[in-house]
Length: 212
Image (cartoon, rainbow, N blue to C red; front, side, top):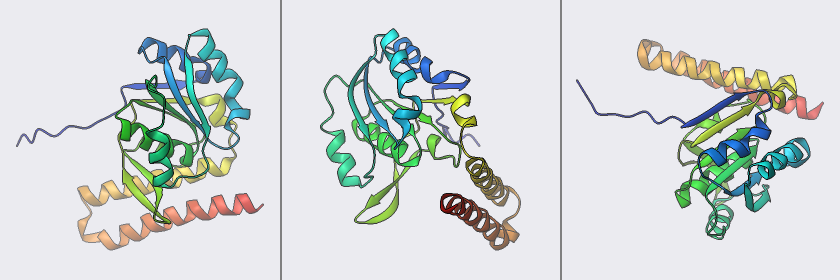
């Protein structure tokens, strides 16, 4: 039967080489000249020069720029409601913290959010949720699907291999979860265990890499 359900997906999706520079053009084409920019630690050094060159060539104005360290919901809420009135779009560039901070800020203000991941260690850059600190504990908080996702393959290729394997584990866990929903309900406990082990493997690989 017809259920009138909808699937939300990003309106803007760009994947390829040299996309960091082109973000300015994409924003100009969508008439979004005022940018609140949230960056992960080290992201400015990685892509900042090329990003700002693209902004300048397309008359994009950065009305707010911030390197994200604190992802408490209180900090995000305070920052979001202090953004300048000239803010037309929120852009997050980096890993999970920067993207979740920017995503939830945009959700609070009902502004378009453009997600620019610098690694593919998980699918959070395109999800409708944010992983934030609430009352000192990590919680998954409802947000909104990004308006746009821009993936620069030059940047992704420069990531350590451990991030690729982490993303692969995350993808496998999604496949098995879908299989459970579709056809494997009698094996629910076994498949859930496989999903958990896959996610644990991803976490351990990241920790081992950081400790090396």
